[in-house]
Amino acid sequence: MTLHVERKQLVAPGEILAEGKYVSGENVHREGDRLFSSKVGVVEIDGDRLGVVPLKGCYVPHVNDIVVGRITDIVMSGWMVDIDAPYPALLPASEAFAPRTPRSRMDLSKMFDVGDLVVSKILAFDRTRDPLVTAKGPGLGRVSSGRVVKVSPAKIPRLIGKKGSMISVLKKETGTHIMVGQNGTVLVSGESPNLENVAIQAIRMIEREAHTQGLTDRIQVMLRDKTRGE
Amino acid sequence: MRLEERNIELIDVNDRRIDGRRLDELRPIKMEVGVLDKADGSSYIEQGKNKILAAVYGPREAHPKHVALPHRAVLRCRYHMAPFSTPERKSPAPSRREQELSKVIREALEPAVLSEHYPRTTIDLFIEVLQSDGGSRCAGITAASLAFADAGIPMRGLVAACAVGKIAGKVALDLSDTEDKQGEADLPVAIMPQSNVVTLIQMDGTLTPEEFEAAFDMAVRTCHGIHEQQKTALKQRYLSIKEEVEEKSEPEGEKEE
Image (cartoon, rainbow over all chains, first blue to last red; front, side, top):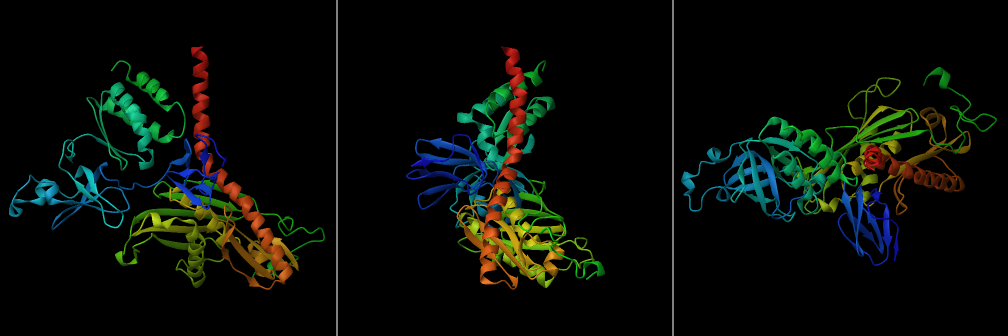
């Protein structure tokens, strides 16, 4: 067993990570007993498990992810939702209305119209069929206020931080309410536009510097500096 | 053909070529990644006088729907030369040559992309030649693989390409347009340096078996060199941000002490 990389090392696709009995994690491609990175990213080593945290990439739906999508079409059985994934999502009418609403009473466009932003949860997805989402549940449903920030989906884990450390710093220091969609759409709403601006600035900084170390501390310093006197 | 281009000496007495290069010398290559905002991934390459943009969109929903495959993503490629990329204006309509190149470039990149990760989608690649001077298919492939990596599309490895030809009876690396037109042979090669798999090999003109061996070896060796440059180009953006951040935080740390 030979390891060719170290923790936090920046790698390109096709770069060899290790040879031998290592376990391949996320974004690692195995050929025989050699492990290669399949994306541009940062190496993560957990025992004998090797992974690459990507720095770019599209959103791939996972069951139970909370996403912010835009209604693109009203169809017979519900709504089509653009969730910034390679696949369009279906939001069935039954996943928005109260249970046992008669079909004739369901006026789809009154509930969500084309262009509306909807916070929803992935119900089912397995790549052979398009994802199914629901808008029923606490915190789900139409977005009526706040600012929309688009972030690269690959940077979302960094924005949340280990056990939510980064996002809690952000919320605490700016006093804003931040809803992070796993698909890269973030909703920010605060008491003043200034605080919202500061939060958005911090989000942009996290996106840009996601691969550097000590980011949470730098964000904290930056936020303290900017929110002074608010 | 212009008059001054006729019957010029491709190699002088010192084995130097018309642009002063040695026989095994590559034109200077400059690569940059992430040059286009709207594309999911993009890159720009300059190889001598060649200037080429590559943009990748996707994986995204397949339109028209019937092109989608149930088990993998479909790769679509358009190689296009701008009307102003050549000495004489080139019609912007896709020529037979451009259609062929689109196809061979797509096939040179397909083995590198892990397209089975995104079934029923398409990944679209656009290669736009802004200025051409021979060897643009190879530079295009090199740039395209960078654009794929920049888009965050999972890959087995990068693809690097370069051409070797024969001019004035001698094997020479990376032919320019004049050398290609006046020379005896041209051999574009693309490989995946990580596994040494050849993904593109074409030849026009004639080479003896010995010359072919020598030319092919030279191409593979050069591709490995280009591959190193590709990796540097991909990482450069992130490394410079890292350096900048660490520079900024260091003086602050000193102040606290």
